[in-house]
Image 1 (tube, helix red, strand yellow):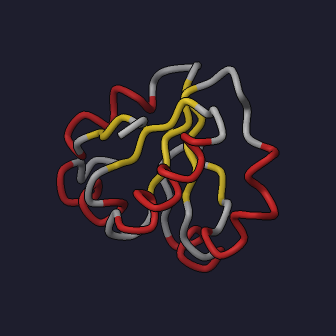
Image 2: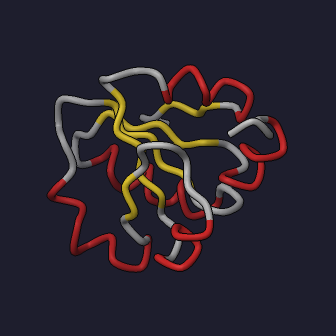
Image 3: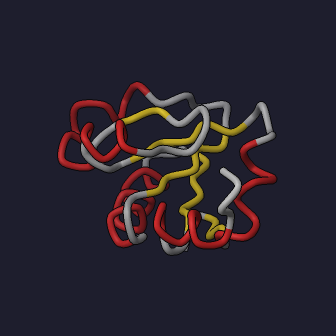
Length: 101
């Protein structure tokens, strides 16, 4: 595996880092309902359209609703040379472990 896995309880420390770029892979509607602070909405279904626009010099943390899509995207993007991390359990897990966000 050429990418990092982040546990839900550890995600808040990544949110504070300036060298991290969060990508929400969910639909625009899901993103509007809730997203991690500072996250950019790049839907998984449109991956081929936006994958070349990601910043190469930053760690990119991917998340989706439950964690499955972020793992698939992480595999693909890490092969392209990006510094990738995926949030285990996705947004749902993050909310359950970090209710203050």
